[in-house]
Length: 107
Image (cartoon, rainbow, N blue to C red; front, side):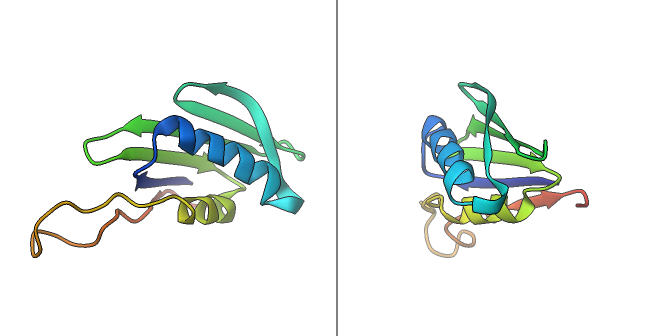
């Protein structure tokens, strides 16, 4: 399943937080860095489960995309820790202050 959200954090900060979150805050299903680059991190759990996270600069903040067959609940929890993008539109020009996660595919 693919998850996506927007945040006000810089991409490198999102990736650092993700590495720490999945190593420390998902105790029975921890995942650790297998590969990483400036815009992505691939983490792997003890059972071989994979989690991929990528960050992309956007017009209104950083777009964060995560994919996994096993860590869907952990991804939702991690996304809930990210600060949302502030909505700079005038009142009445749209909805909420952040974009909710987009879920594609089936788990």
